[in-house]
Structure formats: structure tokens, C-alpha cells
Length: 177
Image 1 (cartoon, rainbow, N blue to C red):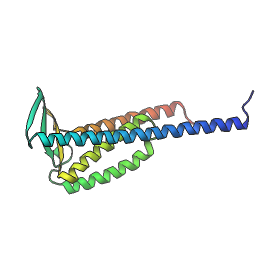
Image 2 (cartoon, one colour):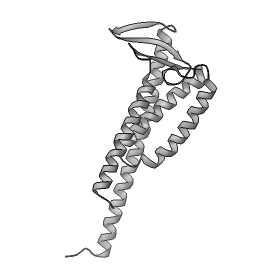
Image 3 (cartoon, rainbow, N blue to C red):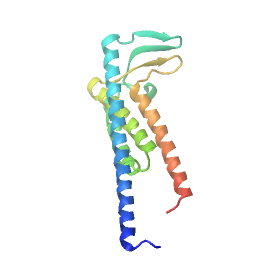
Image 4 (spheres, rainbow, N blue to C red):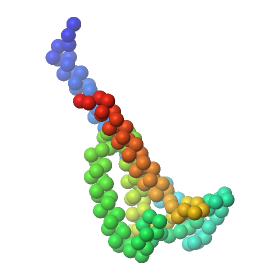
């Protein structure tokens, strides 16, 4: 018994609806992750600024402190004192990232989550640069520069994007269209 043209069209419409719902869910994951990282980042930085004086530090466990550090450069303190340049570069990078992410967020949930973490972290640090002239860092392990929740979001997000794209690529190789 073969499926008639009406049945085939109904099946194709159902598949299309399912795919659209999946893409919509991935965009929702992206937004929730971005807003969560941004909110947690800004709240934790406000707590640090409100409870610790600049350059003050509290040991949490041996080898790990909570410190109030203002980074007026980029990662690891590179390009200190060049906030305008760093802010402009951050905005340009965010625009490029947004364009690239718009094309890949639909691939799978891992990419969507990673993209949300990365964008939320980048926006969190950009807010600091624009409003405070530097980024508030406070997670301070021994032998590593201090960092913050936004930095964690950026690094974890980038890693998840790579993992998600590799998984999508592997899936595409196994099931070519």
C-alpha cells in the first residue's frame, strides 16, 4: 500500500513544522543562555564592587581568592588604558559574531547554548567597559589572571560551539541529504 500525494504532502508539512519548532527552541535556548550569563555576570560584579575595595582580596581556599580587580585591557590585561579601542573592537567583534551565529544557531542545541553563553559574556564585559572604563574581575586563582563570569561564559561558549559544529558536521557526513 503506497502513500498517496496527499499523505506525502501532509508528512512533509509535519516534518517542516517539527524542524521549525526545533529551530525556534534553539533560538530560545540562545536567548535564555545569553540573558542568564549577562544577569549573573552583572550581579556578581555588582556584589564584588559593593563588598570589596579595589585590589582587596579574600582567600576562599588555598590557591583561590575572590579579589576586586579592574582590567582596563583585554584578556590577561593586554592593551591596558585603551578602552576606546578595546570597546570599538569588541563591538565590531560582536557584530561579526552575531552574523556568524545567526547562520549556525539553528544547527543544534549545543551550538545554540554555546552561542548564548559567548554573546552573554561578551555583552557583560562590554557593559563594564562602556560604563566603568574597565572590566571587573574577581575569580582569582593562583598563577592565573583574575577573571569573571562573563569570561567563563565566553570560553565555555566558544568550546560548546566547536563541539556542536563538530557533532553537526559528523552527523551530516553520516546522513548526507
